[in-house]
View 1 (cartoon, rainbow, N blue to C red):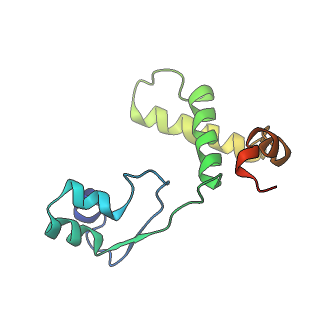
View 2: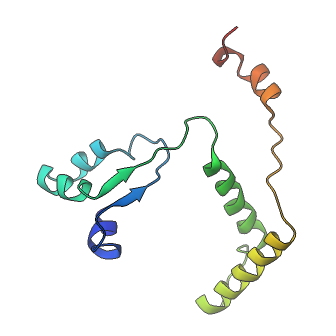
Length: 120
């Protein structure tokens, strides 16, 4: 968070952050990591947008990272430029093929497996 303010986006008035719901991804966590004045300074430009607790687009992004690890990033690359070209080619092919996430855990499955979370 400090790097976002000081290094990457020092000129920005607002930085929108989309964290997942870990307890370390909260404004309070900054007060644990920094002195109060520093935490306030860092938080002045923050706008938090939390993802839903149960399933979200972030899950799909995680699946894509996993797929890329298995199909594209599963070997050493001699340099960054080659790696970038390979990732762009991989992404282009995925988009051209209109690859989608095939959810195998359906809402019906969830109601059975997570019965205690669903009202009767």
